Length: 532
Ligand code: COA
Image (cartoon, rainbow, N blue to C red):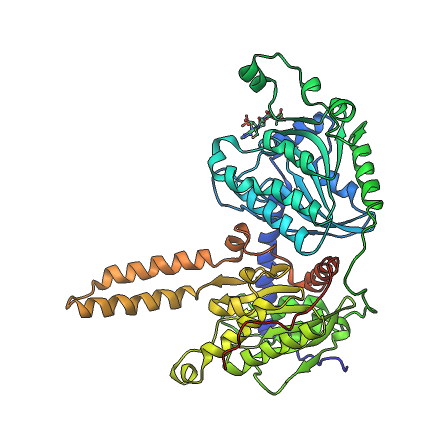
């Protein structure tokens, strides 16, 4: 396979403008991530440290193999959603390597409301459990939580129960679950260690009970002390809820690493082949990707900076050219790439469906590089059956069983989002670039469509439209849609697994594929009925 050529002109005005816009946006991302890392803020962090405890991120760092990467998931869940919810939704989660094994880590951010869970924490916990399940990862819960966010209990009580079900089903599916308990784990929270396969509790810190002393007093009039009711020593020596009593947090982390080391975990996917760096600098991606999704960019230039050796074997390069399909490797893992090079036509959709079948036939994972405004519209295209051809692509995406990774680079509009394996199509991981936009359609188009509909309705009723009112309505609607299509709005609602620096795309895809290969990589040849 010969390397792809590149025609990027680093001195062009467009390159410079794109680069400046991307850097500004990345500065905003850094600021948001810093807020996520700050937990509950200085007062609560200082109080936590003064109690001689490690911060949740320090616990994760000590748990992971030295200098190994941590693929953080949804660090901006709950970003600016209001209701006192902090970015990150009081959970730090992701995939990291512990004793040589990729594990799903879920740590409660105990400096925010004592680690109490809100409705976004529930969504994030659920997403983390899904990642563990689909990729067959052992999971490690680092527990120190006040349980439900009590004033908001109605938003979380029912869906929150799923976390305990997920734990026991993981165990049934032979995916080990480990709980390291550093602090409070009360009421429902007590079932996190209660449902886990392996439990470690930190002496004099872990408190695990169905009801704390005040509730016990209210319920039975018993005067109970915390240690006898739910202390680590009691659970390790008397109740048996804990398997290991750790003298301190460091020992708990060492025990957690030792437990993972004896899990006998084996990856089921293919081992990586030789790795070759791309020929071109990933730095160029900032100059390639425009901030405005209406401005097209050449996706081959992106592929050339993501895949090993910039080597790409294009499939059907002269047919359906608005969907680039082809084979490559990323960090030694073979992938079938589907990348947008314009709107989707019938031919491009058919080509994509065929390509997905071929990848399934050969057990090759899929990498979707999304920059899609949708399917082509108009009489000629409808008569050409664009619906049924688009349906073939969506059919293939829906029923494909090889792992898929999706990167939303620019536009992600309409059925294009679905056909290119958007969130609802369950890619194993889905990350976004900072300028990506996601919606049914662009704000301007959406407001324009409503304008035509309103004028039509007024004409049918024999009334005049109030031009001023319509103009105001359009303006407000466009503003609303623009705000709701923004990458930060989307990531706050867990429509992706996080916004990444475009320069990190290759490494993020490599880590995601490696995590996915903990499960068997098995393609299917079974699809729904393809309409011809
Ligand atoms: N829901 C909402 N807010 C909570 C909360 C909860 N479950 N638990 C604690 N908070 C708030 C506190 O009101 C406090 O807010 P403030 O700083 O604005 O006053 C803040 O979180 C820190 O709590 P604090 O009690 O000072 O922290 P701590 O580290 O000393 O103690 C706990 C932590 C978890 C031991 C203690 O807060 C507690 O027992 N909480 C209730 C646990 C419980 O019974 N949960 C029911 C689960 S279903």
